[in-house]
Image (tube, rainbow, N blue to C red; front, side, top):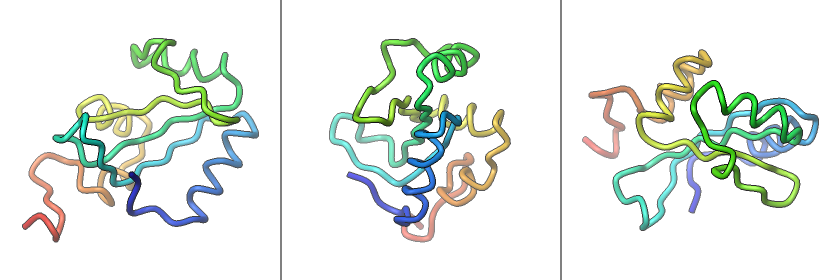
Length: 109
């Protein structure tokens, strides 16, 4: 279940994925299988070879790609999520979703 994203953000992510760009979408998220993770970053690209090459540089396995509809993507959680966002220079994702160590959201205080 996704929270904290706007429709236009999702539409822009989809457009980039369809156009073969590496696209990032971070949102609040709840899945009972992963109760300690409150966010996920979806890294998608419609060009599967390009996505797999991108994932290889972060030690992401090909079998971890979700191939749903026209939006193949990796789901990043936890430390790997933070590592990738930092290395990709997406500090706004880290800040907006309170992912840096010790950074608590207002609702969590």
